[in-house]
Length: 254
Image (spheres, rainbow, N blue to C red):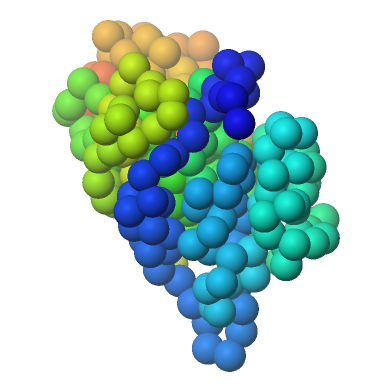
C-alpha cells in the first residue's frame, strides 16, 4: 500500500519494534478484557500483535479507505470493531466505558491534537502507548528550566505519569520520515491535580508559554485577579514553574 501524504503516513515495517510497542502496554484487570483502541491501523503491523492478546478487546480506528479494506481482509475476527473515521472526531463515549487503553503510531502532523484529545478523555483513557516524533516526545517528558519544557510538558504531566521508552530510527518505516521517532507511555495518575476548570487551566498554561521570554507578570496581565498571585510566581518565566506551581497559579488567578 502506498503511503499518502495527506494522512501523514509512514508505515512501520520493523516487526521487532512493532512487537516491542505492543508489549509496552502494561495494564490489565483480573477476569476482564480491557478495551484497547489502536489509532490508525494502517496495514496492521501493530494490529497483528494486538489481536490475539487475551487480556484485550481490540478496536481499530482508521480514516484511509485503502487501509480499511486491508484491515478488514486481514483481521476478520475484528468484524464490528474496525471503525471507519477520524480519531480526532470520534466520540469515544459512544463506543467505550472506562478503562480504555490507546496505542498507535500517530501521524506526526497531528500529534498535538491527538495528545489533547487524550487529555480531554483523561477520565476514560488510563494508559496510552504512542510512537511520536522524537522531538515531541522530548517536549512531553521535559522538566522545568529546560528549553523543551512547555505547554505539552505541563498539560500531560499534570494528569499522566510519562515515560520515554525508546527511540526508533527512520529506517524502521516505509517511506522513512526525515526525523527520529520515539515511543512514550502515559499512565493516568491515581491522584488527579486540584484543578476545577480544565479549560481555564489550559488557557493559563498556553498564555504563559506563548510569551515564554516574559515574566508571568507581563505574560498574564490580560487575565483577571493577577493581584492575588504572589510575587515569587509572577517574577518567574513560564519555563521556571513546576507543574504543581502551574496548578497553584491557575487556582489563584481563577
